[in-house]
Amino acid sequence: MNWITCLSLLAALVIGCAGARLPAPTYPPAPTAVATGLAHYADVQKIRSRYEHMASAFAARDVEAIAALRTADFQVDFPNGDRHDAAQMLEVLRHFFVQNRPPIQLWYTLRSAERTGPDTIVVEVFQQGSRYQELAGKLRKVEHDITQRETWRREDGVWRFRAVAAIRNPHRWVDGKPIDPSKPFDPAAPPFRPPKP
Image 1 (tube, rainbow, N blue to C red):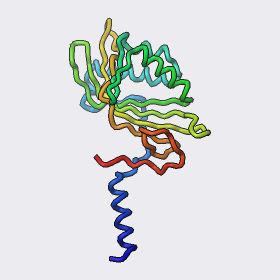
Image 2 (image 1 turned 90 degrees about the vertical axis):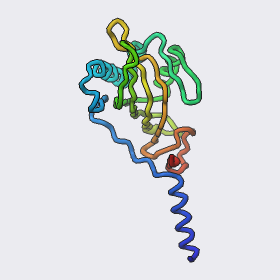
Image 3 (image 1 turned 180 degrees about the horizontal axis):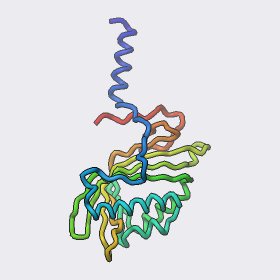
């Protein structure tokens, strides 16, 4: 085996171990979608309409409208063990609109739903987003997707957003290039290849 063949095999091994490059994101035609098996559940359709309101409120940068969709005891459990309450998440939301510029778009795909009480439903949501940020001295398009479990509670006949948990599989792109979602943006970094599971 000559040295050129050895180098070729080594390069293939490194690329294979690093995982496949993330494909560019594609988006549904509407801001919300529901898995086929859930389409006939009336409460899931009502929750879907709340996601449509949320997508519209993000596009309008309307903090009050987003907060109105949440319960007073809204909380988010992060993968590192941290938990933010409603007040903390309201500050996170305000900072999001300082950091991000329009157009801000979100898409929600409801993949599954589980009724955990007469007025509580937990849905698994695939969330996708697109917006603009100042990064490395330039306004850049930032896109993401993530999967998480979101709890909705019916209060006085209205479904409200209660909690976020089981946040996993985050992906991020800047100007179409996949980047490591756990690290600050580096324009000189090669395209991120997620490790194989």
